[in-house]
Length: 127
Length: 137
Figure 1 (cartoon, rainbow over the protein chains, first blue to last red):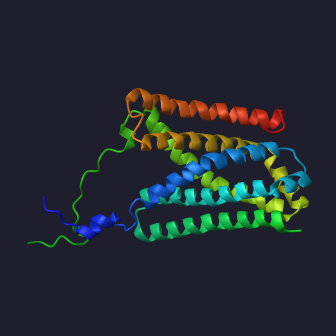
Figure 2: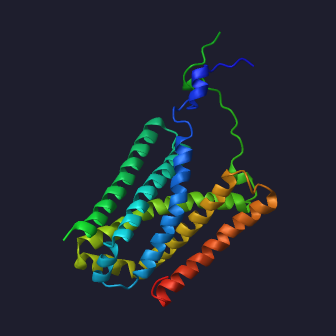
Figure 3: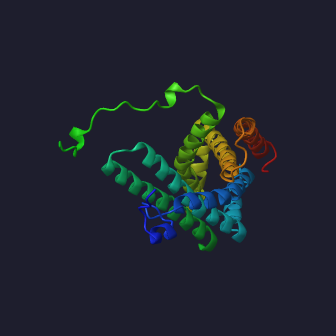
């Protein structure tokens, strides 16, 4: 078999999309983080069921809780963006629509991340 | 030699059989549900962001938002959200196990697939029981 790829191409291991295993690996790293951070979220919300506003505000402004929440937001939005990207690439075949959907996907993930991070920081540092 | 460039010149070829011709097996169904719960959690992230925004806005708006979550449709959505999160988490762990190359014999595949379904239901019930009756986990 004649190898058509150059030695440099093989050494880089980036493939035709120039990304290599980047998508796969980030999906896995955030998945592992989300197992722990997701269980933390479940615990947090369960412990705040029926709580009044003062209790909620106090708990969310606790530094450890805020840090874990920030971790969840970052890891979660990265993970869901990659996941939705895979869904779009599987089902949207028209090139223009696909590019628009992928762009909207990024905008949505960034919106969720920024709105949540801003809220958590405001609860921690705001009056 | 005839030019074959352009879409119009492409011949009609038969498509390969798709999922509707296969008998649904548990690992296949759980794989599909994994994607569906992932998409549901994607939309559901709006609820988490809404809740955080409400908490950062003030007591009036927070109570208003929580009163929406406390309605029957609101509770149903949160119950579904809990189950989707647990199912996607256990399904994800199953896929992480498979990523290592382990657990691919038929018996283990069935156990892992049924286990993620059963586990997600048990965890959802457990979480809601603790949240409603014990005031948190």
